Image 1: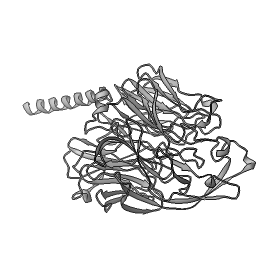
Image 2 (image 1 turned 90 degrees about the horizontal axis):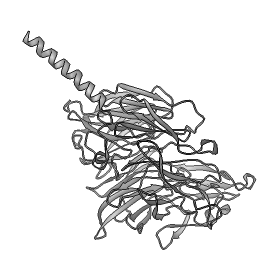
Image 3 (image 1 turned 90 degrees about the vertical axis):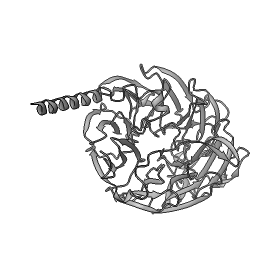
Image 4 (image 1 turned 180 degrees about the vertical axis):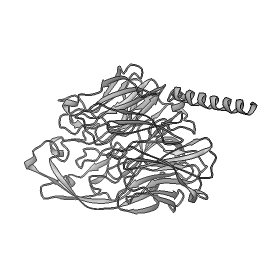
Length: 518
């Protein structure tokens, strides 16, 4: 009888624990959690505000990674590929594809709830994840709406427009929570479509501030474009957010928009509470090859040539690696990390100067890199121990044409890729020297994550999940996933066991050591 009562008490305790867990889904994510994420979480797109995608977890090591195996797999059952960075809070993973959001048990991969966005005519090019904060989940609909849901069951609390979809705006990015602000940018490729970044109240959805990428119409240097379609990073000491902007329009006809076209193709530093511009830097001034500067602005504190610095690093789609002082925006280093031939040098700020002879032309121009860029939106990683900035690179060449018959609007031309390959590169941030390369063959499109144990997690274009040794790029382990990864790996620790999440197609995979604590 005593034994039976004991079993009953254990069962009731277990049920209470499960009920308690379900009632606090995303409840524990507050400002302190976002500032100092615990090891059992990945509470924002980059994991933390720095964008380094470097985890302090060390259970999986170069010595035991050969034992890595599949813990569980979650299938969306839908055709769109997962491009989202999984968010983990309070033992729940939030994963998305366009129009769909799932809450998934982080220990088992079982669905807890599923939200489907109403039918719409928005752009379904991708959906890159959600933000969580104080029991709420923030999801962007393809038609330029933000939806706030209750984390425990997916109930919609409010749904607001962030831009006018009828004008050509769309929303694919993961929002970013900073203080009491939900930050969300917009996309759109139509001419005469000004771009912006906005902050909303996380409780009500009320607009708090708006920063316009483009100067007022009629101003000197006026241009449109500059989409803000990827989440930025944040320095709480400076209270500055760092955001990248996209290409100007018309896309391939730069003659219709003379000048540098500020602040398109730029990294900008904004006051988090007001949205006021503090400084801006253009990795791609007067971009007329459909590149941008939305790649992650990675924040690193450390020495640079003998002086302690608060730095910002970016491997930009146009082929250059930049190191900036993130307090002032001053350039510390500009160097190509692959074949680049579109610039004729650097200006006094360290910004590349576009070469008019490399503008798309009626008879074609041979350009490196190609339209996809020397890298793209998938995240790089920075390993503090080695000082290596590790990025999925795409050395490539393309023929660009400007077509007068297309006029001065829209795409205004064409590009034809000639050659390209995939390679993981480890860049020494002090010099820009590439310390090692890991050849992938065809381009992969996967992001990168490093861990304190000396491992680099990424993927190749053949559908393999790869684990490399960070110090030299040697392959330590790999596994086939069926198709290529289009997102970035993440990791967390639950019940004493480290998990690594990857995705391929519509499947989310969780990997772990089979003999780890459970």
